[in-house]
Image (cartoon, rainbow, N blue to C red; front, side):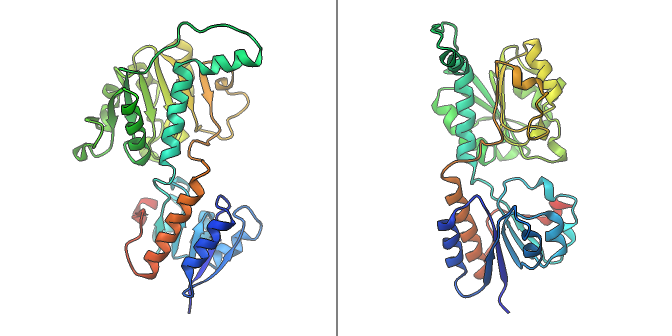
Length: 318
C-alpha cells in the first residue's frame, strides 16, 4: 500500500507544491491542506508522511511516521509523547532561514549604530537635523551566542564588516571555522564582558531558558548593543528592559519575544533605542524555495532509504 503524504505548508506557493508533488512520482498518494484550516486535524491524522506543520497531539494520535517539519525549532513538540511513537522520525528546517536571519541581525545593527531609526522618525516629521554622533562598527567586537547555521552566516558577514569575533557554543571542542575564540555556555559572562555587540541565535528549550538574565546583562560592558533573533524564551525581558533603562545597553534589536504578539503594554514598544521586529527575521522571498528544496530532498531520501537531512534523535522530544 502506498504511503499517504499530507502537504500542510502555506508558506510555500503553488509552484513549490507542484515540485513536491512531482517528487512523490507514483510511490505515494497525497493531499494538500491549508495549515490553518478546519480540515487539517483529520488530514494530519490520516497521513503517513506530514510535510509542513501540524499540531503535536494530532501527529501523536494519528498514523504519521515521518514528519518533515517546516520549522527550524522544535520546542512545541517536546514533552508531547512523540518520542514514544513507534518508528517515528522527525526532521527540522534547519539552515533554510540562516541567511535572512543573519542579514536581519546585520540590518538591526546598522540601524542602531548609524541611528537610522532616528533618521526615519525625523523624515516622518519633515525635520532636518544632521547626525554627528552616530557610531561605527569597524574594529568593534561582536559575540555570537549560538554558532549553528544562523550564527555561522552571521559570523561571515560580521567579519566582512571588520568586526572582531568571539562566540559561544555547547561543544567547545568543535571550534569554529570563522570564530577563533569560542566559549562554553557556562562562561557566557566572560564571552560578553568586552563585546560591543551581542547576538543571541540559540535554539529554544530548557537549556537556554532565560540564558540572558539580569546577571548576564550586568556582565556586559556599558554601552553594548544586544540582538535576539532565535527564541524569545532565551531572554528575560524584564532584565532586558532594566538593562536598557539603566544604560548598560545602548540599544537592542529584538525579533522574538517571550509572549507573541508582544503585548501592547510592553515597555519595549516605547523605547527609541529598541527595534521591535515581529518575529520575521527568518522570512524572505527566497525561503519558500529553500524549504521546498529541503522537503523534496528528504522525500527522495525516504524513497531511496537514505539518511534524512536535519533528522533529530526523537529522544530530544522526551
